[in-house]
Image (cartoon, rainbow, N blue to C red; front, side):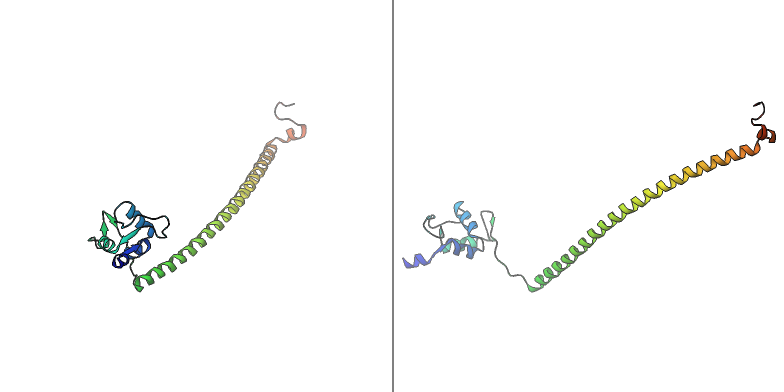
Length: 164
């Protein structure tokens, strides 16, 4: 009997052996994918009990799958890959800094554009005022020219050809 008790695994132990979460082990036991030796006991801390040989058989199920479900096994990451990841993370941080700088430059450009638009509107108003002044001066010059073309007697006596 002691041999059989040692052969049983808790949900936590089965999860460690399979390299998955305890939730995944319970899910597999509930759907029958991973045979459980004992149903969960509400008083038991870890729920299901599994025979070691059943868990190992599930684990050795060919390519690591059972009933079409994949088992994720923990892997060690080579230091070179970790270094590449760290380099990319640093590079990404640099890009985020550049992105922030570009956003600030865009805000500055927007402010500058708004200021430029205000200056342009002021210049257009000034040009319209000057155009009105030029039109008034042009009219005055036409009137002076017309006055110069009047005959001397019309200037003295008033009127022009038949105005008398």
